[in-house]
Length: 316
Image 1 (cartoon, rainbow, N blue to C red):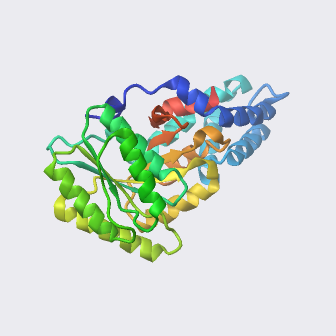
Image 2: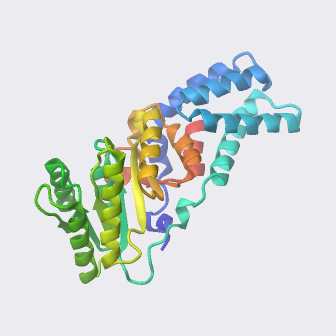
Image 3: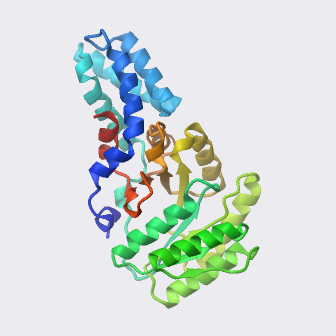
């Protein structure tokens, strides 16, 4: 079953509301770009470039977007400033489609009866535990049997928070004592999930970035141990990033993609920031699909990322 079907139709009104702060910021900047102008010229494009960069879209992605619009202007000979929003939306969506190797809609749950294993990575404080809890809720609501694994054994608070979420959602959790081997917890979690016929396993991991070598070794060990139980595990390595940190999220993405094979992204806390443009830049630059976005505190405020609807919410 495809995850878009699993999570139901995206609630566009919630998305619009969740991106309101970013949208307001972008629109104020865009209004200044076209004031007193009737057509898109070099000055408008220079100002648009500045708007995108200051909206945390990122320099590289911004340059690609501007180049695409320049080609449209050259091809059409004339483009009014009234058309700029529509063209901007079209080119950003096209760029994201071209530069994403895998589409988030292509991720399916396995049909072979084996649990689908999601290993969640990310630094402390980005909303990792909350994302795990909301994912567990979404899967359970769809009729899936979920098991959580508390492999962040270096912080008592991390385990406690995950226990709270497991109780809140009503799904079992596997945990061990503080300081236990994270790989051992992951092993026990998969054994339980397989024995009990679970559909989905979500494994939390430590969020330390101070030593990339240690991080890489730890995540590799967890993955290798899981493969002893389920050869295809983990099916998904989900990196959680805090969208409100803007450019810092790019650096975290860079470090974690070097440390392990990340194949999906979740970008959180987009409702309280004007830095929502970071989703566009990260999605483009890392060639890893943004799979989920967090746009609020409620359970339903974790949404499957839809490029067209996201861009439409930002620039409409």
